[in-house]
Image (cartoon, rainbow, N blue to C red; front, top):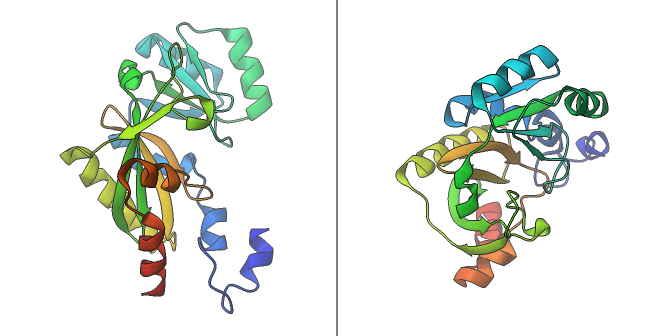
Length: 209
């Protein structure tokens, strides 16, 4: 689809730029921001994963090409059989140190035209570690810490250079969780319901400008 859209993007304004959507892997792109993330590796090497488990105890594993909290697992010990099967299905995967403060929710930050324009928190339902609203998380009003705001501005600036006009990034306990959402950065309606601030107006105002 992005190749088809490439053919007309000089005649029609397309948001986000189709070339950029193709070039920015929503998980792998975050490798350039790994210093702002919890301990993270991108790999299909079972021995590297074993070492990572030994060092970090509780680990989140997730596919590189997935969305909406699908196929994300929290493992408290290295399970060779399960992880081998998981790699066979998904190829390269993300292993990330589990942050227990996810119980207090994550933060979804909205970026429009290189600017940080809003944030909400999403609290996982009881017994879950997934903060996706589609997985039952509850959205609440929120604000960014100084650290989160600084990181958000850096990423927003980089994405604008990549011709990404609209994006969403996520934090857990002031750590970037590694998802740079450029295909479907959901949450504007939820943000409006919570704050009565209409970021759709911001979107169109920035696009018109």
